[in-house]
Image (cartoon, rainbow, N blue to C red; front, side):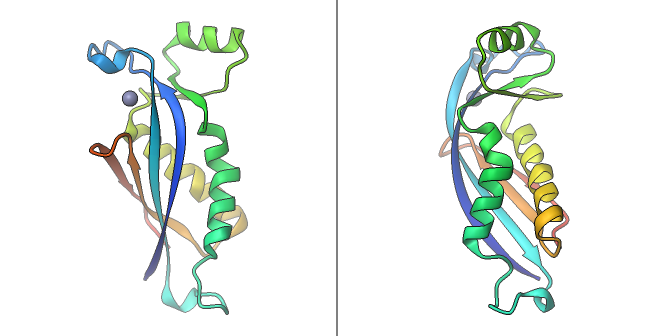
Length: 146
Ligand SMILES: [Zn+2]
């Protein structure tokens, strides 16, 4: 197996609900840093010796996935008050079934990137997503790779 990793950044707001009482229950934002690792069996490197061109990875992930998250509010589907405000004020938002924690967002990103890859680059799959909410706090989700 060979892997490549590309780093991305995006900005988003969120808050935690469902009875969460910590400081993150207040709406706030992060400049997220995201490392996405793709894998492929060695025998499926392309004729240029690549899993996938880093520029192609950038375009696929940015256009297909991060374009939805960047400068959006990431909101739990149970947070009806916030969803109502966002909808009424024509704000960008993405809903999640659970609280939009780094863990939940990272898993969502893994699944969404795999959908884009399956459509455009079927030999690649996501092996790992590491999402940094701050410099010191991250969540990591491991996929099956390819
Ligand atoms: Zn936060």
